[in-house]
Amino acid sequence: MMSGSIWALLTQDLRLAIRHGGESLMPLMFLFSVIILVPLGVGPGPNLLSAIAPGMIWVAALLSSLLALERLFRPDYEDGSLEQWWLGHLPVYGLVVVRLFSHWLITGVPIIVFAPVAAQMLYLPPDALGTLMISLLLGTPILSLVGGLAAALTLSTNRGSVLLSILVFPLVVPVLVFATGAVSVAAEGISPQTHLGLLASILVLALTLVPLAAAAALRITVE
Amino acid sequence: MAPSRPPPENSLLTAHSLRFDRRGEPVFNDISLCLDAGRLVLILGANGSGKTTLLRCLAGVVRPVQGRLECANRRAFLGHRTGLKAALSCRENLNFVRSFNGRAEQTPDEALARVGLAGFGLRLAATLSAGQTRRLGLASLLVSRREIWLLDEPYASLDDEGGALVDELIEDHLNSGGTIALSTHQRLPAISSDPIRLRLGSERLETR
Image 1 (cartoon, chains in turn orange, red):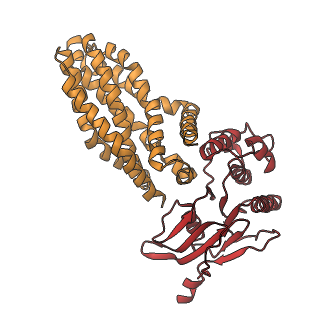
Image 2 (spheres, rainbow over the protein chains, first blue to last red):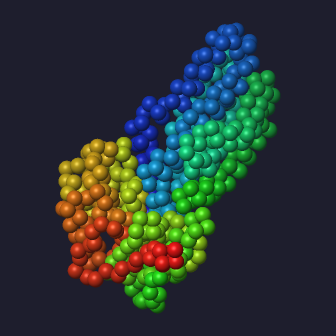
């Protein structure tokens, strides 16, 4: 029965994402707009581009993950399906995990899949590509988790996008620092293990604490 | 306010002196009630007397400030927002409710036929009228087996035929051993057994 609830919510989220196709592709489109526009803005020289590539890809990934946050819980809140979460088989934090996982599948995974293309476009040294992929694999779930907490906290405010951004930015700064740091040192041929380890520990921390905190925030909003 | 009775054996949900405050003002206070198998509880009261809040409280969505709930059974709550997705078809919506809450004997298509929406399976919920959306909400009660139904204004935006349908569904559910609490300020359910009435807000009106 519990797996039935998980599967039901996951398939419904993905089905809705496919049905709102354009909206779901927006984060990926945003990422590529940035990657295409940066060389036009700073000049197409390979040296400069390869130096800023880790930072640009990560900043674009971070900002694009913010785009879909406003709609993470709001449609469910407005159509009444959020309060049904307290009547199901699963504890609400379990459903929050499912929702954030589907959000990551929709916004994070496409970014990871297309990151090698973006890396090519910005002349990222080939040696650093593996580290970029690992850093995205560890980092994009953190973006979804932290964003999910902020989305749950700002749900009761009417159109809380500005507040949401203000809440998210300070919390994701460490992710940006360690992720770009890992890719930069890998580009110089140094082992990025320390940076990636710190990134992984942030992921574990967010994974354990965010669902509980977000579920509590949702409860306050629903009441 | 409500008569406090000892919980009988066949009570599916028992509430002990519930109290709920909103911004420091009591919405309701000291409400005790039992939802017994086969019995209907009518929650009556003026607008803003806390009918919806009490039902949400019984559903476990809202936590009471004081008092406690005893409930080991599955609950269904149908409010004026039905919790259905406009971008999904009627059948997809019912399939979701069915796998999210546990399956009942009725399939989505049977439930749609029961509420007078036969053949609407592939229609998007967004294209339904207000009354048809209410009917789809009623169908969502049928696709998953839950003993306790908490219905907030089930007669809202339904025509006479729809009202009669609600009465039939209530009767069927009570006969199958379920229990229902519903709020209404329009029509009263026309069913064979006598409902228990709970009137909210009268105490507050007297003190002002």
